[in-house]
Image: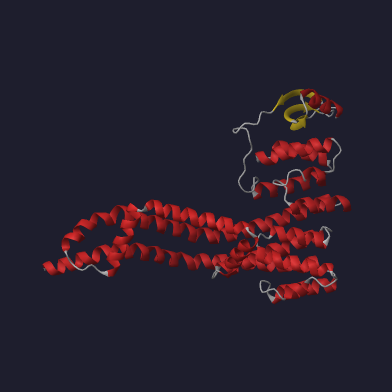
Length: 402
């Protein structure tokens, strides 16, 4: 099989670009003609290192995908068919990965493939919640409402993620600056005083001896430090990939002072919002729980969700196993229990998500105001310790000279 880049004209006169897989160029040409398309150009794609699409993380930015959902809903509401709406959005989106995926989806739609089936082939672009909600929307005939709910869900999820990310980024940046400042002082500044300290023939303070030893180690054994850091990172990544190691790493993240609670609240908000959106879109509950388990990206919380799904299969309420889980506060499980009893589970989950999204926002604002002076003091303390280690022997020397 080979890939061919084509440019065609539809019966409506619209110019369409896309990619097609076929045995050879003749087979690709025949396939396009079967779709009643006028072939303008057809070129075989040569896969080289430079032409390959290499994406790290999510290839489509959150804002771009949210905009796509909003525009898609608007076009459908205006009476534009899914086929034409996909072609229009493929042309105007600024995201190259999304543009390419939509072009392929449009090609599949022209062959008569359902939209939900066409997007399954692009799992990196279209998340599982999008695929399942679209499939449910197709079954209920409410694609427009489904897209609106998706856009709202993605917007709230994006805001919550950005809030948590901003809270984590500031201390990480300050910590990195502190480490770089220490390395610079220990590598470039401290060695200049070594000869002078040796000529003093005096007992150096403990803090000075410690700083000199650290400086000597960094200057002459930097390769061991580098290998040690690489080994720690490699061990962390290897442990994270294992089931048991990944579980305990996620457990430790939830137990970190201050930031652990923030991650816990963010995960609860994400779980509640996702489950509410899926439930409101008529996606089966067990399927919804499976999606949430994968989406929540924490093996501890995911394990409790998996247990809840198993309990539900046995005919028990969803809230029962969650009440035994330490990660879910009583308010969450009580709201879920009330939702199950009243038949308004999606509304109760939506209220839980609203509460915790607001809680995350308020917590981040408080953290920023609290962390800024603390981190400045931390940075000043580290640099000040190194400076003090250098200055103390000099003060002793000047005292003896006086």
